[in-house]
Length: 488
Image: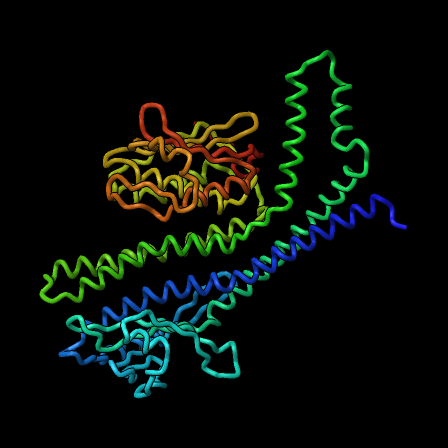
């Protein structure tokens, strides 16, 4: 015969196991469609871009694909090495084919379907009919891993559809990300289930015991001297709030992979739209060379922006997955700051900004010197960007009995009130005064993660007398024996 405590514990355990199972089933089933949506959205804009380029070679309604073959031959022959999380990418897998208005293939980047009749394919016939056309087909019918996603875009001449372009992406190229996301989500679910198991055990004890939280509250009352109604009510609400927060933290599972995919998709839409707009304008006849060069520069700039977003996001994601520092050692901060300041002199000179050091004394902290150098470099680069020409940026170091503070002060416009509580959010950025351009918005989020890993904090606010000041506070450590103590 099971005891009352055991029955309650098993009942709660079954409820949570079923809940976690349903949640994991729903989340893991939702990962693949989200990745496909993200990939299809990118293929839509890529197909429109290539279709705009093809339209530049249409003569009297006839599509000329002569320059596509050497272009893709060069692209496929490119040698590169890109480590994208667990995926090591070495070659371009994007496919492109162009058909005439009857659906016959005029060009195939793989060289396998030139001359074939593709009019029966959904991406072709719908696109030629002026509708949105997309499909997923297998290269090998019996192999589901050979599936390729295609998205079509029309090729127009004088307002008439004279052909179409279809851009394809092997599903397997992002299927590895899906499997990795599923594995990570599964482990998050298992970890959440383990946490809920502990919580269920505690909760079962509370339910079986006649007192539970009430007993804890009564014990607290016995230790009090005198009658203090306000304090009693505050303590009761505090205990209840703490219990609710523990339950909330235990049962909420956050799908970080889906969040990142959605955020990344949102952020790259703007530069991709700018690239598409520039490509469409480039096909206009009679455009002055100076204006054409300006649109080409826009394409290059927005492409670089996408690359910066991808690189920064990968760095930030890798940092967020770390719970502790892999490498911890005493770090002497004075030489580190001097090195960072020297490295920033070239960028500061271009902006006619002076970088000055105010190091009251040497101090040290325990941590990773590489990450600390990256954090300070980010703060210093940010300050230089927001400094007016002829201004100065002050990099300071001060220490108390327990903490060390690194400050970066600029004399720019400061932080607007509406942005004061958003500066550390991912992808939030203010326009630089000299260029009116925004950064990726990931630099300060990167600094915040580094500060957290070092048991410190980062603050950014307006300084007295104008400008902004960033303060990186870290625990004070022992100076390395060979660093020496050098005062000013």
